[in-house]
Length: 504
Image (tube, rainbow, N blue to C red):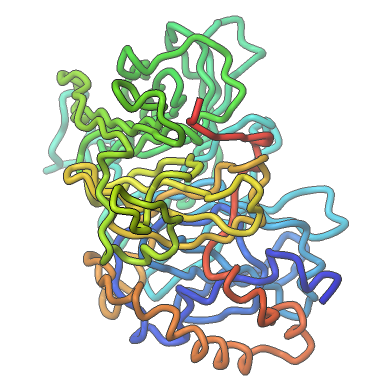
């Protein structure tokens, strides 16, 4: 085959796509590909709106259990997929919200879309108009639902006032509005540590802005933004150094929270921080994972690596210091013959000369914390630096320690020499139709992974029958390529030349 049909973004995986909600396994947490696919998929997760030029667009969320990677499919009915300029990129995720950029060939601008998993009756998609002043090339985006914030209003008769004389009202669960925040370093301000924060309120349909001044012991480069789960607190993360903590509504003073002392570096790092570290809120604790070369007796062994985690409780006064939770070296991670998809691993001879699956001989990068399990981490891996098509996602239990599962990941859209920042975490799957079908809690069953490949032919046939003959050429996989496309995609819009090999 030749031409556009070979473009990886036109060939989405088959896992995670269910035409009917009753067929979909339950989940509360997912790893999400930061690059959308371009494909005509339509189901109970789909939402539509009009772009700035009037073109119709549809976004569908295909959820899969970690270590499989979930992904988005974007489609403009009536337009050939080649009219879409590159892959739409996920800029932010939080709770049931997702922010996506989009552009068509010939456009000199980018549209921004807010996808919401449940808007009272189902998923919704809204065009977001950004004010020109906040379009800084190094800006970071974040989202926050109204319902997660206690609003301050003027006191009324019978109202309960807080210490500042305002009545606090928490948005109800039925409140489907949200905030969008855009954060960047303000180079025009005389203060050395000033940042600009723009905030959009979907209820008022207005943008507002303010300066944030905090003292950073070293310079701060934001590469990820998370909600800290404390009534509107956001964490603007520099995984090499520390966190700027700020109230999205400016009701509390912003401050700087350094990482554990042993993790802080003052050097200018060439490689992106998120290929070595991740930071997330896990079960009420701000958690950091660090992927590093091993120490101790295994330090000089080829392909060995270590993974460590720290955490601290999120409170109003941040009384608790960082706690070192886990420090695991790869040779200590057990690999069982009954581990899910263990056959995807390379094999080495053991002391008896038997071939055994092993974590040795793997190049690794991009650790991702589980949002639902404080001792679980996911890590990207490749058996060869020359493999541009396939990567693996490893699921590791740090408490045991043991390998829990392995999944394939389509690596053709990675921009780095070996790896690039590709995925993030999301709670979105638990919000689809919270009144029925997928509930607000629960996990995928392990049997789903075992049955996935046997389900592919059935899903493939149904899917291809559902799309127009005109566009089928873009979406069919050649028979010899099918095995290379059963998982997600890639990020890396901000980062290139991202080589990761901890065998230093």
